[in-house]
Length: 313
Ligand SMILES: Nc1nc2c(ncn2[C@@H]2O[C@H](COP(=O)(O)OP(=O)(O)OP(=O)(O)O)[C@@H](O)[C@H]2O)c(=O)[nH]1
Ligand SMILES: [Mg+2]
Image 1 (spheres, rainbow, N blue to C red):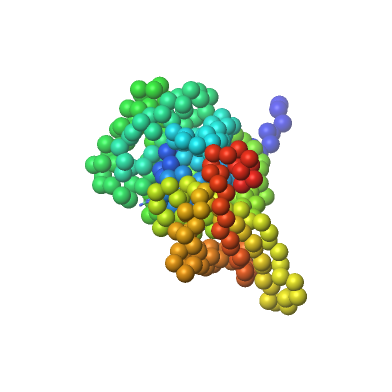
Image 2 (image 1 turned 90 degrees about the vertical axis):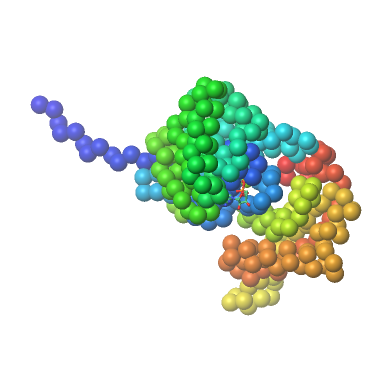
């Protein structure tokens, strides 16, 4: 007679899923919606995300680490090439890939280009995520679903799922996590309970400033903006119940001619960027902040390897 078998252990899964897609497809917005907090900045300008951002979803039986990547695009600068490299390294390393395609734009060469590359990564399961469904009617959505299905057939990609979602309206967001989790390996949690991201505070602060600076700027300017936090120090001599964090940050642009636009008439624009981002930073860090923000020119930094290194790329 055999001994009674031990209770089967409830299995726990943990692993990585990355979101890829064209710039502006809604990857970062979906990442934030799934995490339930802003871990990645977003904007209506393409190429907002410039490094991989990890957002962590905790469940009783799983830990899903979302890796939000920069939008893959045809590079025009050294920065663009570096960003694409980051994406390709990432999707080679994750357990599952979520390919984001906006519902409100017909599939284009940009999507096909990415899909072709994905087709070459045979071992990793892929789900197609149709984003921004709140912007289209059901007929348009149905056509998009069919087009994506066909795209998979054309390229020999077997979509594990095709799922429509609206991150802004919170529609089907949890379902994305429900579908991704079974594709993760069995594993204990990889990050401490409660951690929502592994971004260093200094980086998050710089990103919040850049997000505020992106609002309302047009043409090439969004690409020209980079932010570096030089120092974050508690102000000395403050009473314990009234702390103040001094943050010194530089906002870089590429040409002297861009300075005027960023600073605005009588410095109004820069002041607004400072105010907006300060509120967000205070909410993030839970402490009052004095933000000292300067505008500097880093000539043609997107094309200059030395400057790129200095700016953290
Ligand atoms: N209406 C609507 N807008 C959305 C939705 N998701 C994202 N957006 C908007 O689309 C724009 C781009 O969103 P992001 O999340 O920054 O896009 P991204 O794919 O991360 O872009 P990159 O970082 O540039 O590659 C922003 O203006 C978002 O507010 C959605 O579900 N519905
Ligand atoms: Mg993004």
